[in-house]
Structures are given as structure tokens and as C-alpha cells.
Picture (cartoon, rainbow, N blue to C red):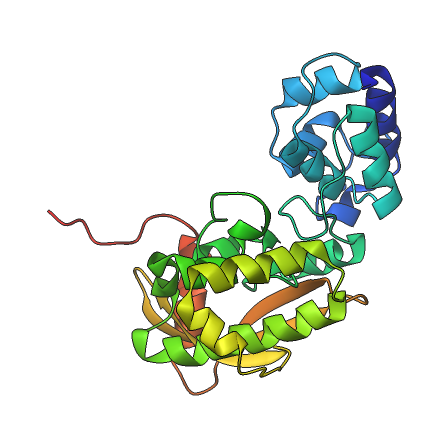
Length: 283
């Protein structure tokens, strides 16, 4: 671990970024060429004092999750992200984990979708990040780390995960998840330990998954119409569109209203209300 070099590296990356590059207003008066320290802290979800200490080469060793947030806030390339982890004395996260590197171009696209629910996931359906409307529509990031935070994993092991869709749609989604997962696992190759362990664990824990997996159906999810159950707004009919990265390991998902439904009005209301609790008071 080299905190002094870590601080110098963070400052050098901060100086090169213009505020519009990360969705921030430039402002009439700026004393620094790139981002201010408080802006990096805001983008990464860290306290300003903590980030200042890091740049000064002091403070506590940052966690893997905090390093991932800094890498995304500063739009680091994969090599730069790996260098950041090495300086902090942390192991580089595997590609399928929640702290996996997100390509800066995909982050830029997510920033452009501020008025549309959107999120970035891995090929194993681990959520990496989402915008404000994505969280309002789909809920916060699940607890846990690694592939067990995958929505597909929770779909077959945690009944609560299925509350996102109406019960009559569950069978269709289960089939679709497994067919998509088979394509992703094949693309990774038979030697990929992460996906092999993922499938083996699911087969042990879910007879339903094992039965669907043995069908050998395959179909990459690109465009799909879904009915999402929102706790306050009820059923929302959306089109879920997928943009795959070049290597297929990550996807940008965004959700648009289905024409001819009340989803337009509901998503507009969602954009106003955000993630506040809209459920009626039981009293």
C-alpha cells in the first residue's frame, strides 16, 4: 500500500476531467482546471474530509467498494482502475463482482439517460450501478457481494426477489433468465471458474433452475416488454432495452413506457417523486 502515491494519482486524474464530462455544470468561476475535491466526493458518495485525507496521502485504507466508486467518478480506464487498487493494497475485483470496472463510455451513456430509468449490470446480472430513476423503479442495490448479489441468483433462491413482477409472469421470466444465462456462460468459456461455480451453486439450491438449465434453451435478452410491480404506482408496462459491451460482459439497461398504456404518466410521476416511500400509511 502506498497512500502517498495513491493521493497523487487521484489528484492527477481529478485535474484532467472537466465538469461537463461527468454531468456537472462548469460554473462561471473555477479555480482548478478539473474537478474540485468536493465534486469527486459527491460523485463517489464519500465525505469531503475523507477524500481530502486520501489526496494528502493519509487516512484509512479505502475499501474495494470505495475504490470502485472513485474509479467510476474519475472515469478511469481499466488499467488506471487496476493501478488504483494496487496503490491501495487491495485485490483487483473479478469482472462479475459488484465492484467490477465499468467502461467510461458506458458511464457517459448512463449520465445521458438522467430522465430515463437505467442501470448497468454484468452478464451474470450483478447490478453495478444505476441512476436515480432506475433506483426509483427497480429498488436499491441488493445486499451482498459477488455473484450472490446477481438478480438471477436471487430470483431462484429468494422468493422476495420475484415481487418485482406479477406472479403470472414468473414462469416466463424464469425461462428467459436461464436462456440468457446459458448464452453468457458459453461466451465466457468452460474454463471460467466464476460462472461455473455460479451455475453449480444454483443447480444445488434450486430444482426449478436445474430443470430449466437442462433444457439447453439459449436466447440473449436484448429487447423485452415487462410488467413491473411498483409498491406505490402499481403495474407499469415498460420496454427493457439492452446495450451490450464489446466483450458481452456488461450491459446498459434502460426502460421506456409501452405505447398505449398509462406507463408514460406513471414514469413521469416517478421522476418527480424519486425514491421516497410512496406506500400508504397503514394507520
